[in-house]
Length: 173
Image (cartoon, rainbow, N blue to C red):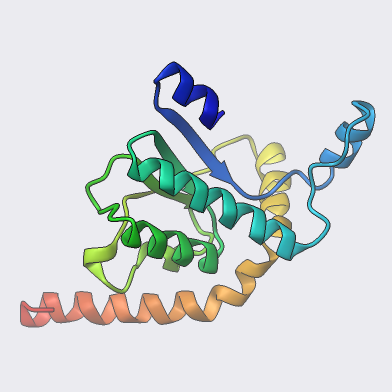
């Protein structure tokens, strides 16, 4: 896709996300007589996502791509943000955005260094109850590492509450 976009001299615009529908993907792959798109290990999933993010960030730096990196994974978010800073992709760059589902890894919205914050969006899943519950269960299964980030989330939330309290009560950060 990157090569084709470059050949046509157009900007490649992608939303990259990790996760698949665990219950449906293997059946779909079998019915289409193709290999399953599910990685054989969680580390393979991390490596694939992080590698694609790095590749695309290099294209964002050159103005050849605009990308939304959707992840609840703390390490992937931090790796991508660090790489963006290394490449000089700043807060105002419209070529990069982060996204996550509301209520999953909320601490990712509270970057410790305001000058390094990257524009992000929270996606609110709005569907009929009979559709949303299975959807959210799938998302939770796909993001099992999310549970390990809960102490990280609590730490960032605590820091943010203290910061807001100081601003409200003392008028300073």
